[in-house]
Image (cartoon, rainbow, N blue to C red):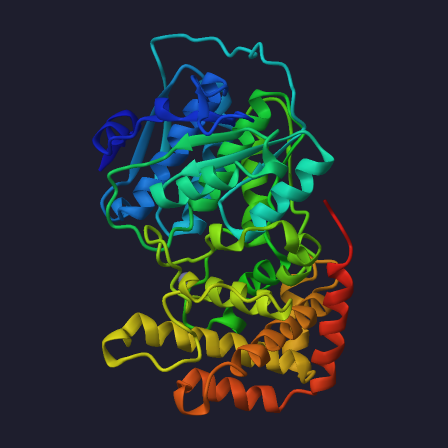
Length: 442
Ligand SMILES: [Zn+2]
């Protein structure tokens, strides 16, 4: 079946004209929205195409659709990327969709915006912890703009609220409205493509330098070594350096300027990113959960919640208990023990076993990590070891707060794994993190 992009977006109620630029005004409680979003028409067409692909993935339309037709006044921009984008989409989603460019009868000319470039870097701002750290740290060093794709109202409002903080009040928040009537939802592998394409469009339209993708290295490395870390479970491809570089290649073929996607935190663990900024972050306002989008409390048991919680505990930061719905190591009531709960605990157990092997210097695991990651990370073994120490330091502190009788299966296994690890490694690591906390980045 052939789909027209135009009618697909209409059917899903997409309205990119609701996108905007949000600037907090110093003395006022209200924010100002300026229309239209200052991105060039050809990039707006690119965003529509990427959003169309995102809908095809999230609503499983790839089961029936075989072709997507884009009508545009800028076919010359799209022709060089069509094949690459098709193959990237296939790798991300397993859907084989043929993309076709149809020149529009209306001939618009690509134009430069009058804006000029006030900003150097665009920080991709998801409302998660890493992107907030990046926004705070890099806004101090460069004139930055924050970019967000609005796929969920709760997360969007968190992003908006976070952008009000004093350290960010000179950085406007550019938002692309990607709200759709798509209902199937679930894990998306095109979310990264959507966010990166938008940041890229802002940077290219305004003549800025680069996009900053501030994901922590622990997660990027785990996602790369996914068959070791989460066997039989597909890992998100949104933070995998292989795909980020592939997306960068596609976007660089669109238009006339190659723009870099920088990954400034790729060699750092999440605790290392947070340590120097920890006094400046309102942790309760950030949202890191994979699975409870739309709710205000995070699930507490998905991989992302777990990594966040352990990384903060490694720094001795205790979050409000209402931050999460569940504790990963505490027995849940029978009603709370769904299949997804069990499946999350199984993944976390794999992650802990993987990290325990690294700390116990299991040579097979170390070699495999190196093999996967050597082309993308400077020292993957060292990064994996530091990540493992942070997580087990968090596990140690977390287990101290749960009575033995209340431990669930994962809690009991975590305790066994912790007992096999040389504790002096964790004590040394704790001191290292305290030293990092004393460096002031803001
Ligand atoms: Zn979660």
